[in-house]
Length: 96
Image (cartoon, rainbow, N blue to C red):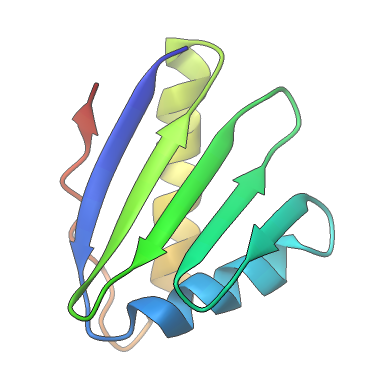
């Protein structure tokens, strides 16, 4: 399965991680703490987030390259909504 990851600089990583996980928990399988979150999407894509002091580490795994590209957009758009004061956040996606 293709994997990509990004480190997003922000001092509000934990807040954004929790907001995003709570938002997606209404319709998706989600588990999270203040520092770590995992979201499973229909079709098998998984987003994992880890909050640090000055950044949010995001990893997306998908069943194929097309879905991976779509999920990168989904994750970045949703994070930008919660980080509207800082948006657009810089995502330096690096495919594994």
